[in-house]
Image 1 (cartoon, rainbow, N blue to C red):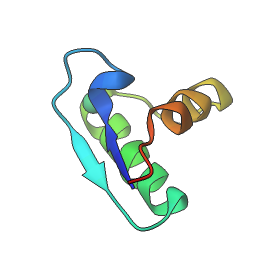
Image 2 (image 1 turned 60 degrees about the vertical axis):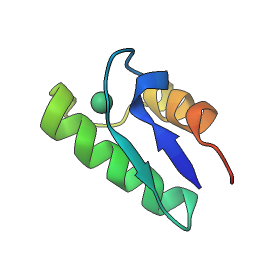
Image 3 (image 1 turned 30 degrees about the vertical axis):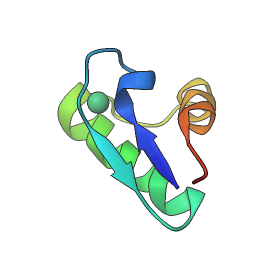
Image 4 (image 1 turned 135 degrees about the horizontal axis):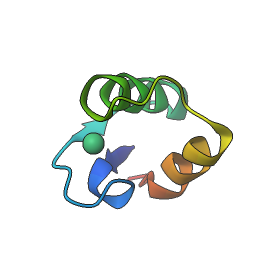
Amino acid sequence: MHIACNEVVPGCGFTASADTEEELTDKVAAHAAQDHGVPEVTPELAAKIKAAIRRQ
Ligand SMILES: [Zn+2]
């Protein structure tokens, strides 16, 4: 599966892919902390991440 941060944060060029949703969410959380100054994944953010995941 695959995610483009651009779908959560318009203009961001970060993309990631992983075999599981958990792994992908971890990668996005690490990116959000590092590049967007987001200290934790809130339920709202988790929902946005989930909606942006492409299962292909
Ligand atoms: Zn981003």
